[in-house]
Length: 338
Image (cartoon, rainbow, N blue to C red; front, side, top):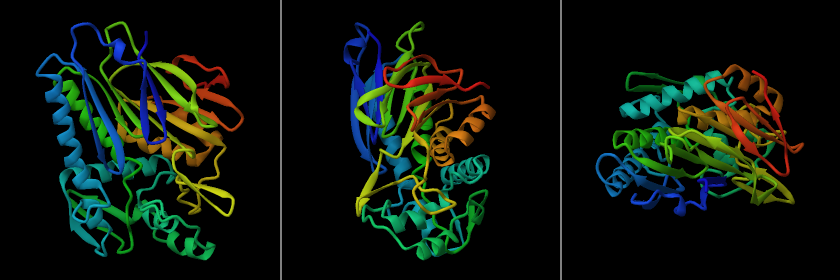
């Protein structure tokens, strides 16, 4: 029996998993709501310490990072950056993540942009007070959206006074990288469910990989495809079906195109990025959805350090060469030639 993981909306559902734990191994599961996301930490076994010790250390790390990055906490570095200041000193980790985010923005040509917060607020995706703004208002607020308006030198952040950031498209990826380090420190086999992000820590055995299932964007009760994946990797999925609201008979999803200020008009239904750097996986999954099929295929060909699974509106699944043993009943699977 295989370990099967499904990625859907803000929850990763583990199917047929408990019976897969080798005899004699321990299993500890801890749940926590943090960074506006329900998270689940499952530790199966360790070579050092206990599974409970590993899980508790991971929970502590989640709380530490939430205090730095959660925009809903008034004393977080994110909230301090979003205040009407032009220069401030931030924590080492915040500076590191901001530099990573700026690099991701550069690599994606601005399709990922952490300074999108002013426009997110217009749509209500920051606090749940949804609404559709006028074109002129969106255009005005877009003047504040540009990752080049924020710079980092050591621990000093300098920005335009109107610049505000949202780390929602990269912070969970960074968190996953930090938790994976803890798992590696303890020699732990673990599954980390961080909303639309999962982190696979180790393998069930030396010869068995994980089997990951991606939910069908058209029918979220079912899986679009499943594939084999090595451990010590992040698997991050972004799609319009994750978070949205309806107004006057029209659906508006949460993935905003930084160039237009509107929900991305994409011919992709979902994007999954697989790699060892969870922060970049997180940012790239958002960016590629914004880019659409053609630009995403070109991007995937240029970045061999990651693997990609693109589900298109034409019922195709496009995969890179590192995606193995993929199975799908309702989609046509095609390879992206690198």
